[in-house]
Image (cartoon, rainbow, N blue to C red; front, side):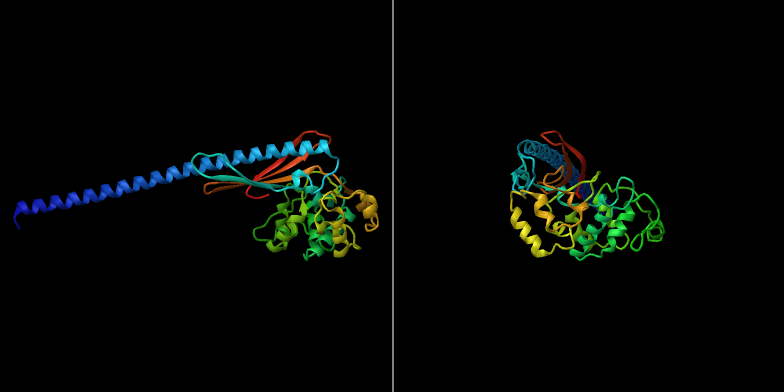
Length: 313
């Protein structure tokens, strides 16, 4: 081959390789830049969503404070109990909305009530929790397991208790909590607890930092039925029709005919202190699910956020 033609061929191939490499490099830079822009926008939208959720929390705090000034009882017909409609999020470039709802945590069974201030098992609360589990078709032994998980001692209760000797033999091993729960999701760590049972139980229980009463005006039907062994679905249905949306007029008189244990009857109330806000903010493709537990002081006192979490309660 002619040396000149060979040189021209090598130059052409070199130019083609340079062009290909340059194009590949340019495409990579464009792709990386697009990813960086998308990551930045996602972070911005997430931060905006969090701020919107905090704004919703502030709004709900005002509603709860005003409610305590207007009424001494809490029931499902009040403003705070209505689901927050979808409200648009002000954003010039993308569409967004915020929705939410408030639930009365005093209408649920507080698992921390299972152990009293002297670190003794509260038998009345334990029996109520067993009844609640049976109503929900969940193994009632989880009542004893929960009490053992909360109490400070390391002695397994009989016959349903479990302490470190059980939990350290699991894979992976861990130890019993042995103190009041901070978050009710910790019960998922109980020996033998499965997801289906936990999901069925979760809407009816809570874990609050102090012993609390049960607001029968907002309690779930299963919690109402668990108050006494004499309570059956037809009795609960009758009670629900009585309370409707304005609550019970005379709690002691209404439930005194059904609840035979004075320890349980004394725990019934018509007002609440603890509420849970769930706010869902959607901005473009970014979704922020925000939970906060609110403590309301009586008679128009301040409403304080005691726990916040993202994604899960």
